[in-house]
Amino acid sequence: MSPQSSDRESYFPAIEKKYGQPMSYWFAVMKDLSDRKYPEQIAYLKEEHGFSQGHANALVMYSRGSTSSKKFTTVAEFYKTLDAKQVKTCKAIFKVIQSKYPDLELVIAWNQPMLRKEKAYVFGISPTKNYLLMAPWSKDVLEQFAPKMPNLGVNKKTIGIPSDWKIDEKLLLGMVKARLAEL
Image (spheres, rainbow, N blue to C red):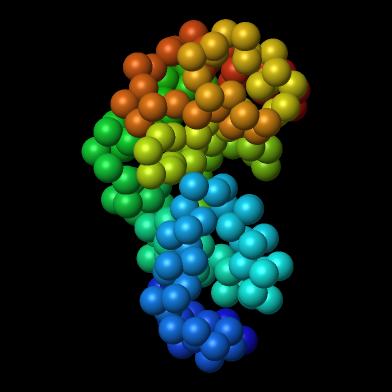
């Protein structure tokens, strides 16, 4: 059974008991895995140490600096967890898009800010420690606009941008227009 608290530390006593090592040991393991991506870290803990998904997630996320799994209910709450550069960039991105498409609703979904039209998601932003990820919610849109983003980190579903990214209005509005055309 998972702890009632949203603090990731609330899992630590169960982790120590179930896997037989103090948290200092598990923090050392995570330090050795620090250059790996989230899925690789989770897989390692599950495969090599028999961790459950919940315990692995608590340890990995805590090691990555997320001490709480608290769910945000408002965008304002979400912004309080970001650094000033990231807040400024997120607000500017959403302002550009909502100025052109005021019918898009800014909501929290998957604990991140997303723009949606009715029940369909159109655009979202996910923060990381060192950069932001933009999501146009469409593989086709991402593929269509990838050539226009040679200096950005285009992934399978997201685009990595610097935390202080100089807003490219034409790019943003083009992606949103293409995504809306799919709906």
